Image (cartoon, rainbow, N blue to C red):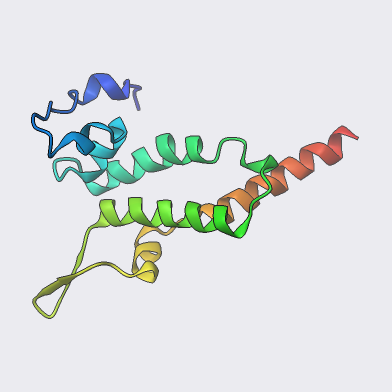
Length: 130
């Protein structure tokens, strides 16, 4: 396995002209690659697990998570997974994927379970330090 830099592998996002697309330019750089159909789904999941999720969970072991923060983190993760996996065709019609379908396809712990695992690891470090 070899290492490559993410920005050297993909070209920069296209420049969008016009006022109606001004919100497109405010999106993060990685969001464009999550939405594109030119990158395979497995590579998008790899991008999510290696680039987006660690940045999102940085310092989460010391957070005092409220219900609102937990809901926001879960919503963000579900939105990203919906962008990656897309819609489901059922009976000739396309519908949004349900949360249970998303997590069965993703087959990894959700973001709150991941934060709880990180907290347990941090607690072990604190106990060993004392």
